[in-house]
Structures are given as C-alpha cells and as structure tokens.
Length: 69
Image (cartoon, rainbow, N blue to C red; front, side, top):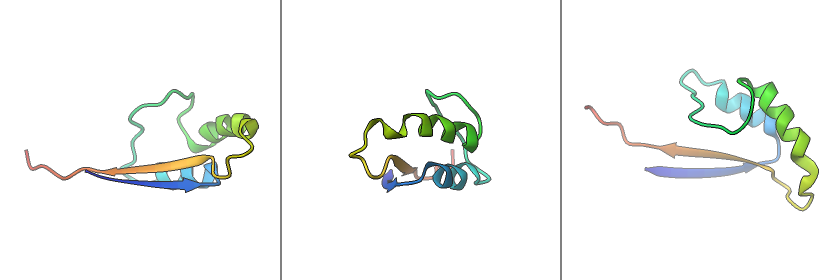
C-alpha cells in the first residue's frame, strides 16, 4: 500500500477532480451530500473556524496492489 497526502487550499477544485474520475467511489463519510457542490458548501460553512490553517483540504490517495483473486 502506498499512501500519498496533498494539502490543498481549495475544496471545490479538489472535490471535482477526485469525484469526477470514472472509477471514483466514496467509501465512507460523515457529511451529507452526493456531489462536489453539496460537499463544498459544508466545507465552506466551517472554513473559518481555524483561521491559522492555510490549507484546509487534504486529498489522500491510497494505492493498493491489484490481486488476481
């Protein structure tokens, strides 16, 4: 397994990039919504609670080796 973490300043662009892929899947969430705009609105509602944080969005990628069985 290979993890990669990107810290991003923009929620909507990251959400559209990730969820716009053909094989994208939401595994689990504690948020309401099913599309980037709905998720983005929730992020924006809480964006300014921690003003010291410059990059409020993290894009986590986990690559898992393909198994034939």
